[in-house]
Amino acid sequence: MQQHNVLILDFGSQYTQLIARRVRELNIYCEIHPYNKIPQNLNDFKAVILSGSPSSVRSDEAPHPDLSEIRGKKPLLSVCYGAQYLAHFSGGLVAPSNTREYGRANLSFIKEGEEFFSNISEGSQVWMSHSDTIKELPTNGILLASTHDVENAAYKIEGETTYAIQFHPEVYHSTDGKQLLQNFLVSIAGVAQTWTPASFVDETVSGLKEKIGNDKVVLGLSGGVDSTVAAVLLHKAIGSNLHCIFVNNGLLRKNEFTDVLKQYEGMGLNVKGVDASARFLGALAGLSDPEAKRKAIGKVFIDVFDDEANQIENAKWLAQGTIYPDVIESVSVNGGPSATIKSHHNVGGLPDFMKLKVVEPLRMIFKDEVRRVGASMGIDKDLLGRHPFPGPGLAIRILGDITAEKVRILQEVDAVFINGLKEHGLYDKVWQAGAILLPVNSVGVMGDERTYEKVVALRAVESTDGMTADWVNLPYEFLQKISNKIINNVKGVNRVVYDISSKPPATIEWE
Image 1 (cartoon, one colour):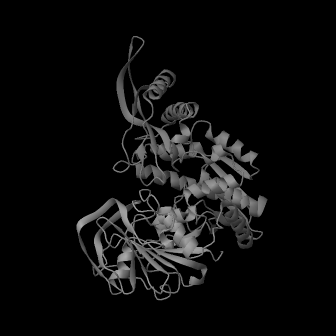
Image 2 (tube, rainbow, N blue to C red; image 1 turned 90 degrees about the horizontal axis):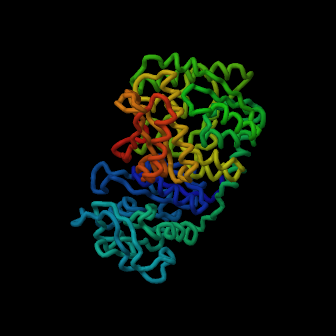
Image 3 (tube, rainbow, N blue to C red; image 1 turned 180 degrees about the vertical axis):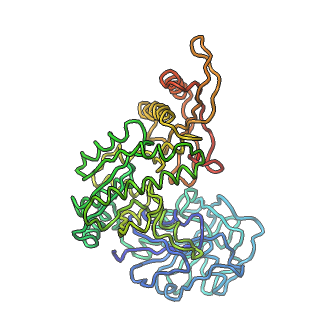
């Protein structure tokens, strides 16, 4: 890794991942580590950022990092909790705030001639989120900025390259947040902006060559963005020593198995398609509970995958498309157990008998970065723009038990909906869309006949990472066309509804 890295110490803030994403948007590589697990070798890092926290520095349980190797030795930016922490334990005073400081505010004072606030003017909007406030600055603290309600909104410590802010520069509502991070990291800390998709590809490919050598690697492809980009990276590094397996669990979208296989062939990947749909549907027969369905699918997937992997002589490695948010979530701030392997895509956690070492080429990058890396390697934009699709496939979009007939109905409905979004130029405006088959029959009239048939729900959401999501306000005219088309063309459905719930409180999938 280059010496142009930034270390973000996480105190449990909901915004920590956002800080990392903003830093990376500046083409600077950064890593998140829990505040109580500071990396031993700090030479790799050129600057440090302390995140916010839901805790109060005045509480006995307050997160208490050891900054002895950081403070005064490396450029340090303390955000929110970090700013209060520096004040509280270095001669300042933090007290409960009389007014709850939350939401939008505007900078009413900025100290002149400060590089930290270069290209940021008074009146700039910032986002506050704290219930304590800094009443007195720490020893040698110099006030840099205030808002109407918060006098000590930003300060620096004389004699150190240490800066602190009470607001969150990483959130969208802080208008000049990115500029502030750039001022600190580039102008003050001198971090080079050299981390690009192309540099990631070069570095990763040479790292994979070194790590894997001449060994064979098995990868379970899902047709999704992450596993595809991981496959192309590995293919660049080890060529035909990469063996990809694409399993048809019978719960994919209409024609997906053949379409995706064709797409992969065109990319020169060494892929074997395995049609195990009968095996999966057999295992699902009679199961209605969502968790039981997931477990049954996971178990059959492992059996099928293991059968196929065993046919590849001397396979030493299992590749996975795990991405950075999965890694961060598995190493929690309170020092919870780190999950060494995530149940990823269709792999429901691998059993001990698969004696394969794990390789995860994407484990340090975010979803949007995965797409940019894929684009820099020339992967088809239709494939990179694909909506996320759940590992258990249509099984968790068919509420109740699964039958081949229900799968057929939902595949047809889903195809009408997704193709309709594409034809009307709406697909790329939606983060994820799909149809759900409800365990409900309703009365309808077709011709002069009374019908008693299935109800389907359509769902389309916008999101950046799936953690929160809003339903998409699709045009009524479009929904009307799609509803008519489904009812006229899909035998067995006589009613279509549209799901207008956001996450939270609802989830994106229904099961």
